[in-house]
Image (cartoon, rainbow over all chains, first blue to last red; front, side):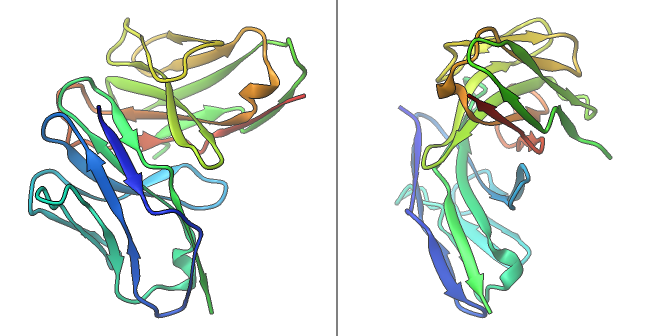
Length: 112
Length: 115
C-alpha cells in the first residue's frame, strides 16, 4: 500500500540550530512528494514539493530532496527561527487514485 | 484571494444532533476533499470528490455523508453526531485528477466538539 512515515515529535530547538525532520514513504508507482506546514489554528500550507527523483524542493530556507533509492524526502533548514514553530507534514500523491497520503506530523518548537 | 473557505470555524453539538460543514473554493478546482485531524493520527481522508457529480469514500467514511453541490462547494454532513467525531475537520481542493504534482489547498478548519 501507500504510506508516509515521519519522525515522531515533538522537536524542540534553539534559534539558529539546524533542523532535520525525517520522512520516508512507500508507494505503488511514482509519487510526487510534499511538505506542508501548519501554524496554530490554521490549515495546512504547502511548504515545498518535488515531483521526480533527485528533485530538490526549496522555500523559505527549507529544503528537501526526493531520494528514490532510499524512498526518503527529509526536510532540512540550516538555521531555524522562532517563527518556524509549527507542525510539519510530509505527504505523497499518486497519479492514479486521486488521493494524498499524509504522515502524522512533527511538531517543532523553536526557543529564543 | 479567498482560496478554500470553511464554515463554521467552531461548533459544539450534543450527541445525536446533526449538522453540515460547508466548504467552498474559488480556484476553479475540480477535486475536493474532507479530512479529519486527530492528535497523533495526522490527517485521515473521510470522503473526496474527483469532479462535480462524483464522490468516493476515503479511509474513515462511517458516520458521514457528503454532497458535491456544484464545482465550488463540497459539504460534509454528520447525521447523528457521536463523541468519537470530535475532531478538527479540514476541506481541501486540488486542480484536477491526473495531475499528481499539484498540491492541495486547505481551508482553516472547523473545530467540532460533541458532548
